[in-house]
Every structure is written in structure tokens, then in C-alpha cells.
Length: 238
Ligand code: SAH
Image 1 (cartoon, helix red, strand yellow):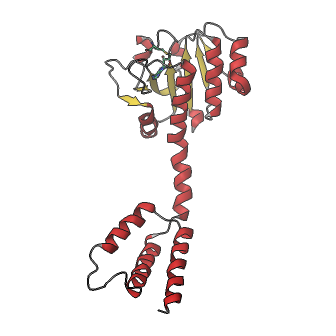
Image 2: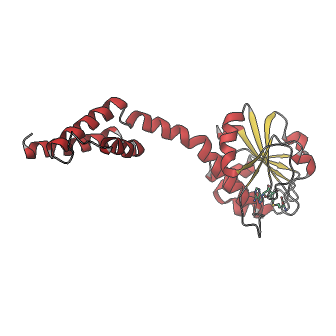
Image 3: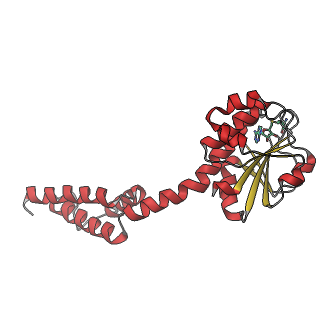
């Protein structure tokens, strides 16, 4: 999924930033780096700051124009420290992942501008959406590679984690039948211990339901809870 996303750095001035961006990408699982007319590349400083991400640098596609960089790309996202009056939706880095999940078909590119001047109007015009990293008002401009890091991290969380997490929890969570069995068991024990007077149940059970629904116990946790109830029943001889 992350392989369908190009990270495009436009006219980067400092080769160190290119290396640091490659490292930021690799740590987040991105590999497709595209450099549009970098001022100095290849360069020893890029290599030095890439550390163990030199493979990302070596595989980087170096092109001379944005047109070339965007060939085959169907969705373009522009990053900007100073969200201006823009024509397309403006997203926070956190919103960007969810937006991408809804809108992506084919290749996506995320554009990063030159260190001092940012994205040109020509680049901004190509974008389907803009994303900014929220910052202090006083100083909104992140270092280029740090901006790549934050965006790559947010995209990773949005694109990879929900799937892994859902698959995991779906199998484990106690289902409705198990929960209802537990609530009935809990009620029996509360009545047997005289914690609950069945003539005046008030809202106790619905309150407890709300608590357990919020916690969403898994099968194992529910087994523990039922084990406690069974132990109480045994002790009081009910
Ligand atoms: N004065 C420029 C700053 C450029 S910083 C501007 O306002 O855009 C170099 C690049 O880093 C930017 O083009 C953008 O791609 C990225 N960047 C820096 N700070 C950012 C932020 N707060 N949100 C999103 N991208 C940011």
C-alpha cells in the first residue's frame, strides 16, 4: 500500500535534507523517492544523513521537471507550512491519511517544496488536496526532512494500522452472546450477594453495561470475569 505513494522533493537545496528525508521515509516503510531538479545530488552529505536508508537514495528517481515526476500519478497532495487561500481541501496531517484512504486510486504523490520558498504556485495548482502540520503560530516552518517524517508517520498510521488492529481484535473480542451471558451471570451474583435488590434494580445494570461496552473485553478477559463470578457463587453456596 505504501509503495503506491511517491514522496516528491522539489528543487531541494541542501543534499543533507534529501538524505534525512530518505531516512524518514525508510523508517516509516516508504521507498519511492522522487527528486525534481535537486541542486546537489548525488552528494556525500545526502549519503551521510541517509544512514541505513542509502538504498532509498540509490533507487530515487531524479527528474528535471514536475511534469515528469507526476507521470502516471492520479492523486496529488501538496504540503505547505502556510496554508493560503487554496482551491482544494485543506487537511491536517492527521486528516490526510483518512482522506487518502477514501480518495486513492492508482498512484499518489505527496509534494514537498524547496527549503526557503516552499511549493511554487505551479506545484500548488497540481494538487487535489493540501496538507499542513499544525505548529506554533510563531514559527510554522519545519525542516524539510522533519516534515517528511511527520507526514510519513501519519500516513503509515492511517493506512496500515487500522487494518492490522481490526483483524486482530475482531477475532478476539467477546461477541454479543458472550456479553449477554456475562451480564446475566453478573446479575445473578449481585442478587445472591444482596448487592442488588431485584425489586429496586434502579439503573445499576444499564450503568454496568455501559462500562463493559466501553471496555470491550476480549474472550479471555471475559473468561476471567466469569471465573470470578463462579468463585463468588461457590463461596456463598448459591
Ligand atoms: N516558507 C516555506 C517553508 C518551506 S519548508 C513555506 O511556507 O512553505 C520546506 C517544505 O517543508 C515545505 O515546502 C513543505 O513541503 C514542508 N513543510 C515545512 N513545514 C511544514 C508544515 N508546517 N506543514 C506542512 N509542510 C511543511
